Amino acid sequence: METEPVLENLPEPKSHLLPLIIALVVVLSGGTYFYLKVSYPFLFTDLTTKMVAFKTSLTPSPTPVPTPSPSTTNILPSAIPYTLPTGSQTYRYSHGDEVKGPKIQNVTFDPLDAPNGTKQTITLEIESVSPMTDNSIIVSTDNRAKTLNLKLTSGDSTKGTYVTSWTVDDTHDKVYAVRYILKSTGDTYDNTMYLR
Image 1 (tube, rainbow, N blue to C red):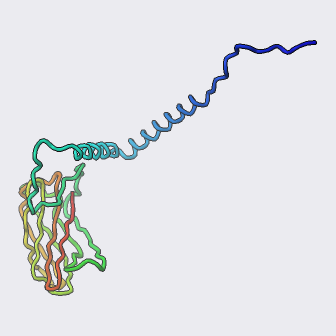
Image 2 (cartoon, rainbow, N blue to C red):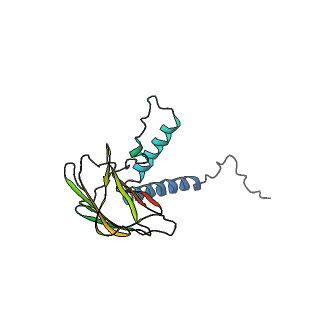
Image 3 (spheres, helix red, strand yellow):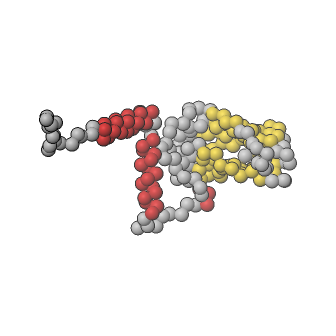
């Protein structure tokens, strides 16, 4: 009677599935990283900056952090400065029903990218339900904040064009914001426009 041979001491069959999965994960991760790096070049720089800032915020600073002056409170530098449009630039505003006080319709910066030592003219078209009583803007730049008063050049205190001019006396490579403080007999509009 014939018996079938017994297979002894044969090695266990190896699974090639795990190395294939690992190779697939590595290829997909590398492809995703390359795609994001090419499509969004500042993504990893922004994430790195935010992670460093978060880590720094968890450890106490050995040196005291300077307190910002009241005129520049809440004005923080841009993470990555970008090139401003050249020449005169006009921005149109729209306001929801919850916005109180005089409402800016348009604001024009001529020029927007005014270098240090040159003249800039800022023109606002403003509408207000009740007559305007006081108006000013605060321009915050890299190292200072300057208050400028607006002058009515056409129209009246409920619908008019207001203008101010100044000689730019600072750089605005990282901080460039305009705070509008517009008062009427009924209410006040106080808001900041961040140009950088």
